[in-house]
Length: 592
Image (tube, rainbow, N blue to C red; front, side):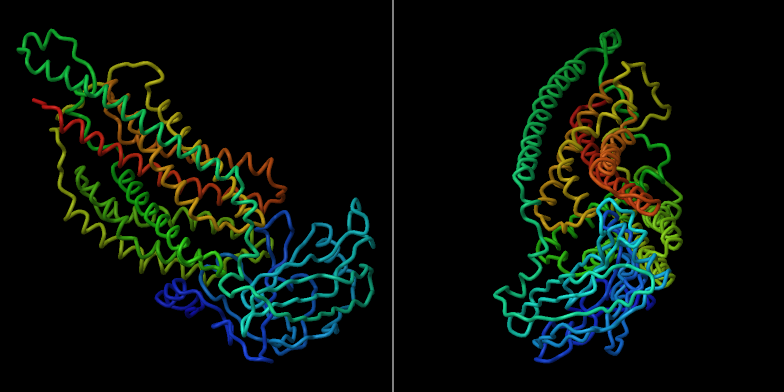
């Protein structure tokens, strides 16, 4: 376990703490306790059950704290601040191994404002979260006297007793359960005491396995999940075989036809019926329109693909999902550290295609994705501030994110751009580029780039849509996603399917003598993200019970970011595979 830092500290400290997440105070560093040593019970957040992301500080409800001396706590990592973690000391006196019989720790008198606050929480099924030795526990605020009641009168109850059952193995805590008991009626002027008790028991659970109880293998390892992986794998085998067979047979015929044409004299060749992808050899490597944007998208796509693969592999071996905020912290660190990948691929592509304003392209590449993410997050932040939600990002976190972008991501992207321009920035196209663009002939409607783009994402989406359900459920419902081996396999399948589909689409486009393949291949592969976003709309309407402006904005805002990121990765991989294919076929055919 490593060091933790405040989000308002300097950037290097922020990155260090983000890369080495640990615990907060005292023995939570090592999770080892001596007999009678204090165990801190943190109160985190409270919020409606059906809106998981709409959370508020625990003491935003008129709960009272225990009499134990307060312990100061700061956001431990940048990711905790971004995720709305609001740890406050509960004031409960808990010592390792010491049983606490039921006893009162505080009391409140319900005035009208407090009664209304609790009644609103009960009516909307509010739950709260606490942490004991970094293990989360949940409890429900209260219940309605009548299930059909509105909860705004004297028909609601709140639970006033917390029973902690803590399991230990040696000198470490391996299990925590919280049970809410003893309901008290909500009535103006009522005196409500809050009580708690702590029970300790020996457990055979290993410390390394203590997080397993929060996982749901019956859900994630259901036979439908296995079947979807098998189905996607069979799709890959079929698609790769089909593409290889069709293209190899077709290309062999093309090569034979073009070789025959080489044996004809000039008059016979002029009278011949020449057609196909060879005819656009002088334009197929022409620089794309909006070159700076295109190369920036490609560089960002390579960067995101690298980050995604690295984080998945680290999570498989490091089980980052067991540590609060570790997954996001690691993602932020890896994204910043691998910024040269963005500059290298984007800068080299821009240079090879004759781009001259490379600083503009480098700035666009460095800030394209951070601007999208920060812009969306800050917009949602205004709504969170209006709701006084814990998701509201503090000003110190905004400054830290800005500093990371300016002082870490930008310089590393500059280094990558310089390396890319010097090591891989020279044009190396197998064909000369004509001075005057060749006119694009008319073709059938289904061969137009727009139609190809719309159809290109169907098969890639079909290979992942089952996995999308499990990922959405883990993020928007009360599930913890832990089957990252499945995710890695599905990600590889997605990339293979995307490349195969994009190559086929590009071949048909070039065979129709349309040389606008660069943007078409990128957008055809990236269109997978549009189908994912449409599926997210279906999921929101039919699979969730979310409501309210905050949760709706949060859902669709971050699902848009997720879809954009997926589109950048698919588009980049599709373009890269297609580029290798195009270079291969034009370098094989002899062209005068």
